[in-house]
Image (cartoon, rainbow, N blue to C red; front, side, top):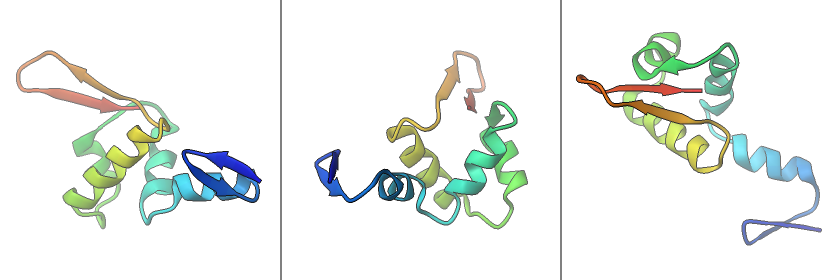
Length: 82
């Protein structure tokens, strides 16, 4: 048994599945594997994903430490995910 973030899992595969479960997470990670991408680029690469869903999945991936969100101090705001 493995404890991760106050939950008990039977194996490491269960941890990985819990981190990447979600309709768009694997697709997002696949696109980010090629290098940093801006939000609008992700929307164009994943046209079936709604803006709300994409935002939610990106936040979850960032909270889990799987991606990095970089904000540039320019106007208009520039945000990249990697």
